[in-house]
Length: 480
Image (tube, rainbow, N blue to C red):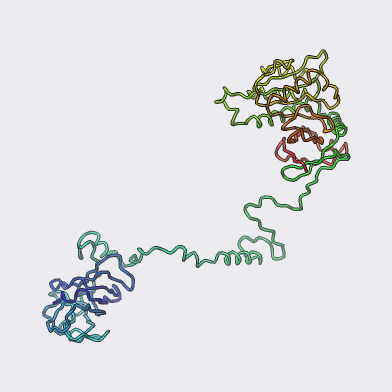
């Protein structure tokens, strides 16, 4: 019986169009002259469907590769697709078919009769009566999907009409890592660089006799034509101390006499005291706004927590610089409390700055008793004068310095005196103008602001000057 050959491993050759299939026999239908294979392979590649059914007219050659041990090979009863076919020899292992049927039906597929087990790969042909002329052509073997055989639905018809077996191996995952390992990136880029250096690359635009320019990476934005000179400022009189910027540029300190000559030369060239006061006030207020919290503190939604600044000023130019800073702070919604003692005579510049400050709505006091008892957000110290050290003996000066030292608020000193003069108020930050003084450790961290002195004015007093500010107007300095 045909059922005795179920499970046998066979190879079916369907010609050049359909190719060769291998698999285990799952069913043999003698009535419809079909044979089905499970776990099929097509031309050595596993099929994406679990079972494939073949018609007798499609088969050119059938080879039995292996017979299960349970098959009784000693029986003489014939079996096959055609019950009437007995032309198959007992020792046959391979069956050939003409691949065509007569008018009455398809050519039968003969299955080896039970008998002695044949030798491997031995071929036995069908009898002439089993060979039919190949006049009807070959039809494509349609895979059996979900238990539906040929012609079982629209999908099967589409496969029969348009399927060519090209997508049968698409289920296998593509090995990206293995494919990438075949690409030698370093060798390819080395070959590209060599080609460009020889002048025949697509990005090489130089003539054969011209030197190819250097090529830079995407992060090499600065083209250094020559080494950087970090000592770009030289002074005729050293102040005894040197500073450096974040980028490493050296900024020497200057004595007060040289600094005074520089500002006098700037005034002769049009940089008046009023313009310098305005520039100093803008830079100092910008630094103070940053110290107060900047955009995290000064926002329209935070009007109930406006920062408070106590501004301590004396009756001199340094005091006028502080008042200019306080005016800009008040314009930026900062609560400014200005301390300035009463004097009969007052500098013209100081009076002008005081009048402008009064228009901002800031508070002005002349007694230390009117200063806040609770700590403020920032104290700006402008009590000291470079030319009159006797002011430190005045009662108002000592009282204001004591209040600042006991308020527990950070202190910013604007234009502090040189280190030879002891500072009564210990500062956390100090802001110098143009060029720094040699400040003591009690001055805190030193900053430098640009007050707009032109380069030629520096040269007039013997200072070889290159601006260290870059894109900023206030920069930090570090002890060299």
